[in-house]
Length: 120
Length: 132
Image (cartoon, rainbow over all chains, first blue to last red; front, top):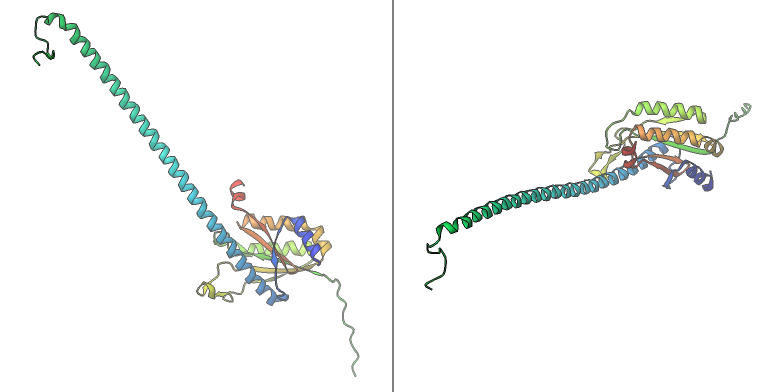
């Protein structure tokens, strides 16, 4: 077959031409050499597959890490919101208490102010 | 002196060598049903191109010194068939369908074949398997 004919078949089949082999002859001897070439080629492809799988695993680990960081951040925000809510409730209670104290002041008139600063 | 016996004329002369490889393992190095696929390939090539010869794996032939003498993990059966450019062009669709089926069902990274001395591949990226 001519190169043009081979290239045409490759194009028709959507096959990738990986290389030209040395003339190893036909029959059993040729088949043995071709098998060896095939083994080496498949080994090369599997190594590429494994390297790609390893890269995918790294990407996956990064994504997992990002997801975990996001979850931790969300938990921290929720805890902060709870803390703020508790603080607001405490502040409201304190204000009510101060209001009660202020409303009781007139009844205690005549007594010495607690913190007047007098005498200094 | 004995008469010269006329040599028989071949019934057909083919000018192209097509070689298929039937893998023994998938892309994860797990064994596949190689015998089944050798049978299917011979049947396909016999029907489509008129015949084929399978050369079974020679166990122990390929001690791999570069890998510390360990056995290589794929021991393909090589199938050769003689054909011609027109038959290849006429049946390229059938050949492609067979090779794609081989690649998908035996979970290969690629299926290789040889036309004369040119090695070709039909790749099966990992994404293909995820999509299917």
